[in-house]
Image (cartoon, rainbow, N blue to C red; front, side, top):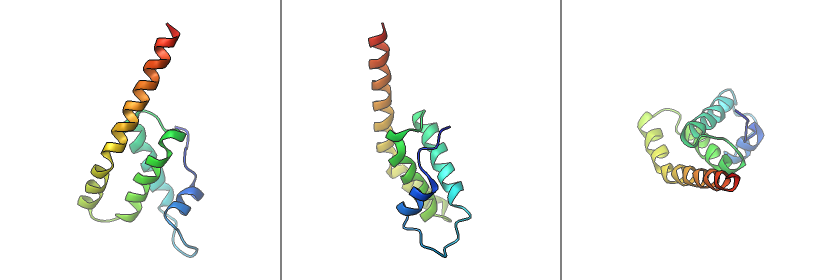
Length: 98
């Protein structure tokens, strides 16, 4: 899976400050990419904002499982929109090839 978000971009997004521990940041970023890939079927420039959102949720809601679940549920409409757009793009591509 091609990385769409760099660790540096993620640090900027979460306003990471020097001196903070960054041990888990790559794990949150990888998990965000995997979550979006499993939801949408791809990780690309178009899904970069979703990867950042999921990784940020995982970073900000480090402990309470219910909070993570609620936060991920809140972005479900964005994920569905990306799925629909991805489907429409693939349908248009297939129909132009026929």
